[in-house]
Image (cartoon, rainbow, N blue to C red):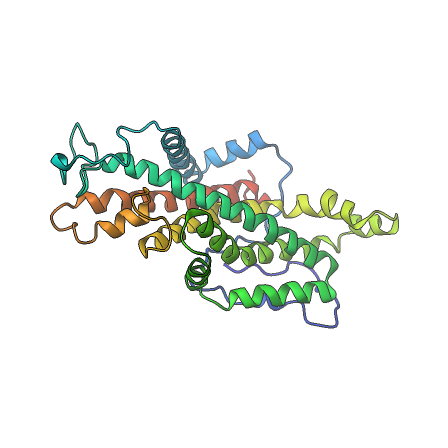
Length: 319
């Protein structure tokens, strides 16, 4: 679903609607509905609405479980050391000793899977935080001021939109080098124009409201208008987009690691584990099944949470 401006178009010497009309790049996350407006409810009420939503409840439970697993793994609380090798236990099937079995080096797959979840969430969280901060700021400024500012930001976003998301991420990682930080930077660059689009759309409508016009007449600064009146009214679609982008960031990080451009051996990574297990799946299915299933669960959980959050924040869904 593509975000489109919900208010009057600004008059400018250059067209400012190209950003909204830009095709969605292949491999990019879906774009949150820019028509969502903030419902005047608190955090607790929002959480209750998510909990009442069937998809939101399932997404909240699954996401919470993933966070607990990731935090525990980051603190070193795993059944075994994810890097420890026991050649005598190589390719043991799932059992009481090794819940998910072991790989060809005798490493515990459960421990490596849990550590891989932590690594993927770390990369995804950093990448999406940077993309949301920079992209939302650019989108708000472009939509509020219009004119040449809007045109310049729109052209920059269009350039990034012209490349398939995964290919652009591959090119950036290839230029910067391997490592989780460079992977996060690549994902942030790819997803920044998504947040530009999501933030800009509702600003085009909000800036035409009477209270914004009155603020200008009273001499309020642009910064005050942006942060006191505009930003609160575009926070809902941005929040929904964060959850959607997180799921796709995990998928992108796993894909880069699968191709050998993300995490490097012996670092635990879900994508790298899937890559290593390709030739072992026929004789040791568990080496592929569990890390792949964890990727699927993470993507589904965050998408369900985003769906529930959208329903909770959209006044049209309010009881």
